[in-house]
Every structure is written in C-alpha cells, then in structure tokens.
Image (cartoon, rainbow, N blue to C red; front, side, top):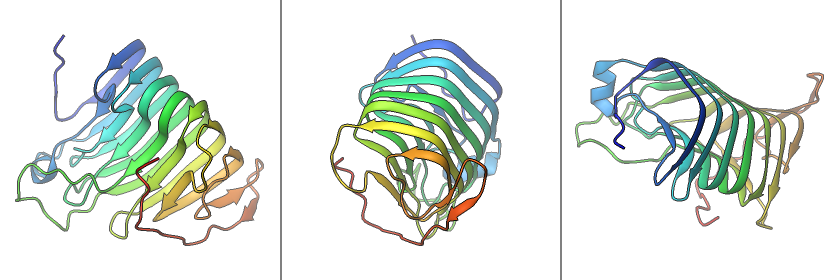
Length: 232
C-alpha cells in the first residue's frame, strides 16, 4: 500500500488503528527549510487516539524533521508503542525555521522501546544549500502526562541547543520501568519547564519541581551539555 506524502494538514483525526512499519509509524510534517517557510502552511489541529504502533527501526509517532511551515495543536492520547527504536519523537534543525507548539501527549504506554521520549534539534538533512542558517525553529508548550512503560532503556532524551532551546515542557504522572542500569537516563539540555507530582526515573536537574497541588518545591538549574550519549 502506498501512502500519500503531503506537506501539511489540518483538522485530522487518526484513531482505532494498528500500525507496524519500517519507518516512523505516524509522522507529522510541514514543509522543508526555505521551501516550507515560503509556502507557510502549518499542520495543526491533529488528534491521534486509541492506536497501537510499532517501528523496529524508527519512531512510533514523530513530528518533523520537516516542519518549516509550523506544527501546532497536536493531541496524542491513549497510545501504545511497542518493540520500537523510539517512542515519541520531535526532530528539527537549524535552517528549518517554523515552530512546534502546543503538543500534548497523555496516557502513553511504552513496551520494549529503546528511547521513549526524544527531542532532537540537530537533524541536519537539508533539501539543498539554499537554506537559511539563521532560521531557528521555536519549540514551546510540550506536555507529557500519564506516561508509563517497561523495558525502556532511555525514558527521556530531550536535547535543545543554544540556538534552539526547548521551552515550557511539562512531565506529570510518569513511571517508566528501565532496562538499562546507567546514570543520566533522563537526559536534558537547553530545556526549561517543570515536573509535576510523581515522575520516575528521577528527572534532570534543569526542570522545576512542583507537587501535585502546584506548589513549587525546587527550582531547576541551568545544566547544559553538548555531549549526547546516542549509544543508549
């Protein structure tokens, strides 16, 4: 079966599906570099619910990396991702421009996934050399709530950069059983946001910590590393 590959979409519902593929099972995109910026059509108002996905070599649900027209107002809920290299992934790069904002993930279950939550800003593939090297994507307003799983090597790998920081990210009610006994398996850099209530494993120090009533318990620190351990 051949699927259509379009630059953008809006007012989309994907539900009650089982998808097993050799690439990203569901990928939300919106134009590539200067061409997507010029076209200027975002992907928005997308609901994904009640689906099971599997990708042995890639991600269950991805946003980007081609997102130069913008991606906004995406809700992903009641999803099981199993036997996959990545669970949910946001990927972009310098030169994309555009934005990724107001993205909500809730009631997500990971089963035997190498890296559960991934945000990557150095996905440096370009249509040609004409891209704008000063076109920095904006990533803001990303939330993860009721996230559970087992057999996961890296629960979170969220690495922004000095040029593309990750802003206003939230983790709430998260418990992911890990299969890899190594420090720093909740990996963050150039990120700003919060943890609310119970989150396991221990989150990175960059995030503010709140109790379930919304009381601030601890302010986040600025700990940014440019070295990413992609081996785990």
